[in-house]
Length: 356
Image (cartoon, rainbow, N blue to C red):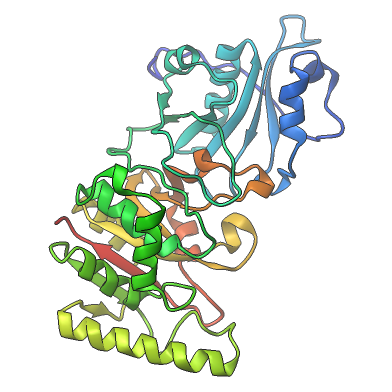
């Protein structure tokens, strides 16, 4: 159904309080669904109910639990209950008023027929889930502007430290350099072993490893410091030998012809790279999206009005975060600019990978 054909549904938006659900919601939602909503602390994702009132105004005919990561440009429906088409329309209208890029729908109780009728497309099922983050077998997305071209496979990192390797593998699968079925734990860990600075993958080492693995893919490292990075949390003795390895990676980059650009990669430059069908591995802090300042690699591969679309190989199960959140995730340009400033020294790191 096109946006021109849809009639807006006036939604009632209320905060979701796990221990104090309003009576109209309790009359609509099944107990097993309510228990899923209450099973984790969703408060970091601003959980709220979007409901549709009955004609008499005293009850609800539909409702949906809606959440989203902070500093992003989407809403996620966990479940829709009651008159599902009305609930979906109300959530879409709610997202439009907030000028967001998309609405997603977890597939716990969603039917393919309801999703298709409301203009949602099925997401590619995940090839792997990040450690400890269970999720639904299916999920759906509806873009509120033009649909973003191309959908990479989703692969969740199976350890806490292999995000750099996973984003590189997803990028190369998206570019057609490797088949999606080649993304598995063996390929994840072997590429990490080639790129790691123990345990993290720093930008130069990651760029060198990608070039070695796929020499026909043009690689550029972007790093705005000459000093060793991502080692400040280690003791002095532990920092020293990691610094030696990073110096060796720089020497190897020069030897094999991997350029190191000393300028930060702006969101404008990321948009231009994506327009050239390049993939951008971007080093970010998780402080904005997840609440803790940990460096993390994500893949920038698409653009939407006002937002850049990423693949995040990690989901935080403790907040109800699943692969549906992390896959095809739009982040407003200003938010991504903030996220890409990493560590107390404010470094910026990225690796761009061109088409083979």
